[in-house]
Image (cartoon, rainbow, N blue to C red; front, side, top):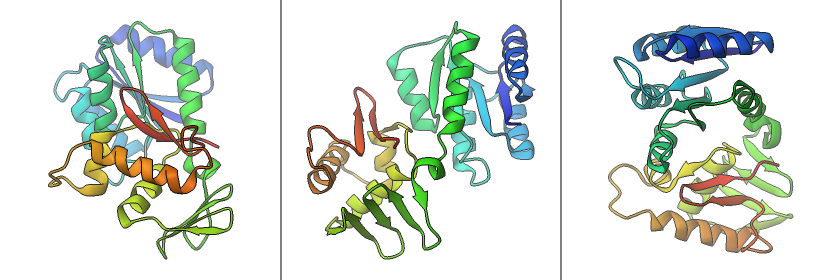
Amino acid sequence: MPKVLVVDDEQPILELVKYNLEREGYEVLVASDGNAGITLARTENPDLIVLDVMLPGQDGLSVCRTLHQDKETRAIPIIMLSARGEELDKVLGLEMGADDYITKPFSPRELIARIKARLRRNPSDSNTMDQSGRINIGKLIIDQERFLVSYNGQKQDLTPKEFELLRYLAKHPGKVFTRDFLLEQIWGYDFTGDSRTVDVHIRHIRQKLEQIPNSPQFIETVRGVGYRFKEV
């Protein structure tokens, strides 16, 4: 039985989401502020978190960032809820580590569908990793120990940063990452370049791996946001 943590300070929202999730067979935990949500996430290790942006104490973006930086909770998928639907808010949520974003008011049916889809998106489901640490995606093999990439049986010469970028995206299929987030993860916080660096490296990876670079089968562009590794 999947365990879902719902963090929202609006009692009617908590009751509505809890009721509908329990009808679907989920175990549901609830918290009404950010600090309580962090505590439950760390002690109960839920399979997924539904997190409101506007919370007393720590707001949802701060909670999301805290959980994403904690090695014990960073792998838990997070779906953000917010009454604000502006693109900037969605981008901020994704940069903090959120996996999906739903704008209030929302349909419980839509939320449940998003939860089911996110719980199915486990990297081990589509991008399998063998005992040697290699990531296998069809004809694409990423050997993490030897820093080698092969496609269709042929070795591909990727630069160290191209390899790190490809590996990071491949380990999180279906998840959208902003350019700034990828810059921080791959190049580090002290990198002085701009987000076009990511675009250039993605283009080079596509040129080396894609049969038709303008119709990518591995790394997709999410317009106005960033990139994601295509789910197989």
